[in-house]
Image (tube, rainbow, N blue to C red; front, side, top):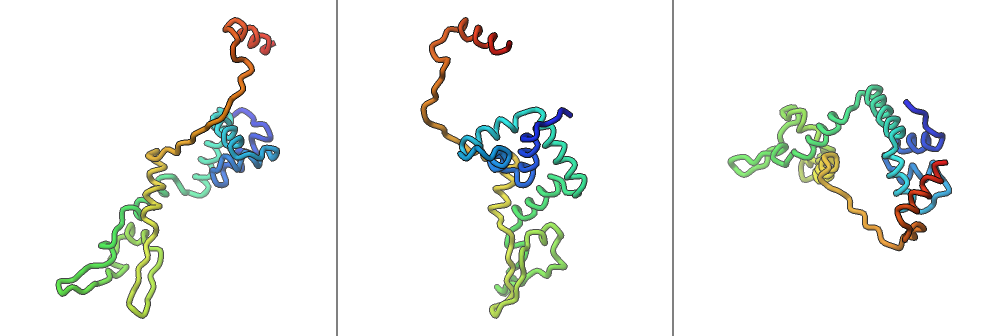
Length: 175
C-alpha cells in the first residue's frame, strides 16, 4: 500500500471516527475554516486512490476486530424498520388488548423494542425509531442523494486561451 502524507493520515483517521469528511478535513488542515471549502477538498481527498485504500483497509480491520459487519448492522436496522405494532399486541375477540409476552416474540421482533415500562395505565412498549431505521437503510442502498447546489463566480485565469496556449502552459508546468 502506498504511503500517505501525514495530513492524509490525519484526515483518514479522523474520517473513520464518524465518517464526517468535512470535519476530518478541517482537523487535518486547521487553516481551512470554511465548511464549503473543506467539504469540496474532503470529497477530492476521498477519491484519492491511496486514501481510499487506507480507509477501506482500516474498515476491514475494524470489522475483523469488532466482529461487527455491515450485514449485521443492516439486519438490526431491518428488524426495527419492518416491525409493526401487531408484533407486540393482539386484539382479542372480546376487544381486549393482549400484550404478547416477550418469550413468545421471535428474536428479530425483540430487537425493535427500546423499552418496556409498567405504568399506572398498564404496560407500555416503546419501539426504536422505525422511520430513522428506514432512512439509514435507504441511505445505505443509495436511495436518497443529497443534492448540493453551488453558485457564485469562478475566476478562470485560463479563460479565453486557445488549446495551443493551454497545451504550452501544461507542458511548461510538467517541466
